[in-house]
Length: 188
Image (cartoon, rainbow, N blue to C red; front, side, top):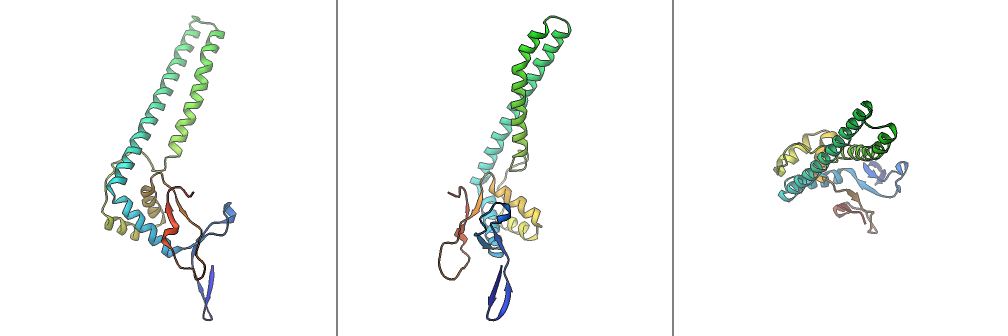
C-alpha cells in the first residue's frame, strides 16, 4: 500500500486479507505495529502460569486420545491375525472369516483416519516436552533475535489451540493503528 505525504511518496508495509486466498481484500493492518503487538501477546501468554497449565492439560488429553487410538488399532490388528490364523488352519470357513473381519476393517479405517487427523492437526507441534512458564524478557529476546520461522514457532506455542484474527477498521477519519483490532479467540 502506498501513501503520499506532503508530496513525497512513502511505502507502508501492511498485512491484508488476500482476495487471492479467498479473503475479502478489505482488511489491512500495519506490519510493524502488528508485529510489536504479536510480540507482546506472545511474551505475555508464554510467561503466564495459567497458559502453561492449559497447554499441559491439552497435551495430556491429546496424548491420552492418541494412546487410546493406537491401542484400539493394535487390538483390531491382533484379532485380524487370529482370524487369519484360524482360517489358515481351516477352523473357520471363508464366509465366517469375511463376516468377522468386515467390522474390523471398518473400525480400522475409522481409527487410522483419526490417528492421521490427530498427528497432522497437532497445532502445538507435539505432545512431548515440558511445559514451563518462561520469562517475558527472555521470550522478547528470542523474538527479537529470531527469524520468521522462530517467531512463528513462539507465536504458535503462545496460541495453543486459539486463533488470532484482525477485526475490520471501524473508526472514520485518519487511520491509526488500533491494537484492539487484533484479537485471540472466536472472530464472532
